[in-house]
Image (cartoon, rainbow, N blue to C red; front, top):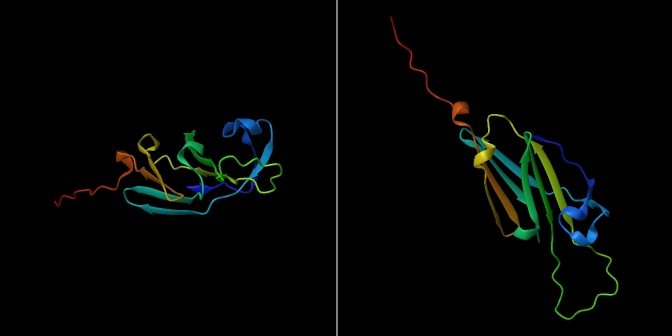
Length: 133
């Protein structure tokens, strides 16, 4: 996997319809990636992002993570001025063809997105029997 992420303006319309057409900068979430012989595990820190405001997509060998944090407002509060917006997160990676993107397992817990991407069967290491003589 290679990191292709930077602070980038994104069209916010995909996750929040009221922001349609508005360009907003996206924060790059901190990510830990561990590779072992069976695949890759990705942990992305997305504080405040609920499951319904999170998009994880795989297309053409690229993995993208986008999410929008939710800032809870007390019921009945009428906001007339707001300077701090809920942050948007975006990160993208290139994925090796050795990984099986059809079997990605994703979970979100306590603001941490965990993705487990297994290796394709053909890419798993295997022992070759050597005959003597």
